[in-house]
Image (cartoon, helix red, strand yellow):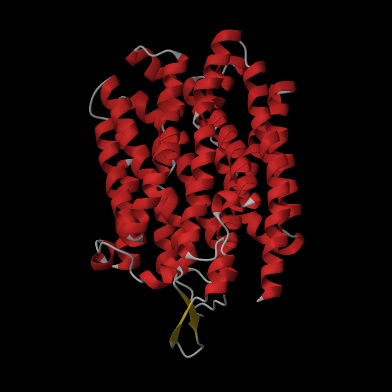
Length: 426
């Protein structure tokens, strides 16, 4: 299958994708800096407040198959619009009452964010030239982490000044901005049109050849090419990437939920100072998200993955052995988590041979990863409650980074070798 893309870079779509990234992590990460306030006001245990943090991730795992089906039926544009609106509704519900509203609103947010998680790789594959996939993916994952950084920095001060209800509702502003950016990217008519905009292209029923003059030639996919398309669950590369993403998600959500508490209990930080200081874990992710695409072009994906893995491993080990150097470990871990999710998403788009295949890969890898990642905040909180210290919980995080390292290195080697062979065959 040969595919050539438009020479003009789709800047409006890049803006839309980046702004959508702001609503897919930041609003749910906002809970982490105010776990102490929520525990006191709502009477929650450490495991229960960990569940409040992990519920969206659990939704990512459970709802991903339904989200993938919905994206296939509704089309990428309509599904993105629904995701944005749903996150806004969830934000309002979460901030409207007590324990029940907090949990129900969080579940609503998690369900619609899942649609966004699945659809963004489809948008990138559909609308972004192959040579720009790494940069756009890096910009998207940077947006995930910048929004998490902003909420980590600002939620605790807002909660202390106005209460936690207002502090969480404030991030509805991200949703409004994302909606405006998405309307700018595709227009209101396309945003609300149900069904794939170009179904033959999105499903891979035809190959797309875009000539320099702008003429689009559609060639039916041959039976031989159709037969060569990999079965997602039978692909060793996809399974290894799913395991790597599981380790990435587990370590990320575990540290995001409990890093502020570690600073409070181990180093004597105030709640506000801990929330602000722990944001380095989100800030540094921008370095990884934007640096990985550039570095992989120079030294290759497997070597880049090895560097990211080494930084990931240093974070829980460093916090365990030398917690006073938390700033260095938080920075290294932040670079690693931003680079880790970027490189996995790059490999998803690289492995995909059609829009349908991209959707399937995205759903399988993210669904599996988030299923395990969802257990991290609750499990780590429970281990801390049982031991009364942070040594054992950090060791549990270390297991996640080891899984990311081993499976990711093997998966990146297989995926890169497979892509090179596919190019030779074509």
